[in-house]
Length: 104
Image (tube, rainbow, N blue to C red; front, side, top):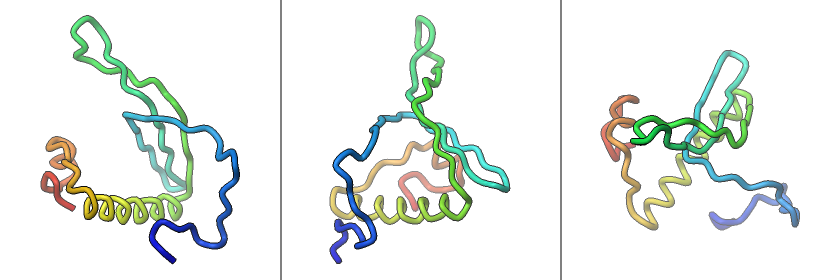
């Protein structure tokens, strides 16, 4: 099976449901699961120094499902970067999570 093919157990329906764009994600977790609040950042005030979150949708999942999504996303990003080049990591985000900027 090629990398872009879906496994045989999946069938894509004609109407896959709503599609959203998100520029912000908040992740909340506890022992029972993970919640991902996706939204769009909107500038606040005259100078735009602050940003408000306009919620778009929330996705809840089990810890096992969240880890599966993480592993799949990590592989997809690696494949993307091999084909198209490295995606720059914001230095503040990389530093906050203990990684070198643009590192894995």
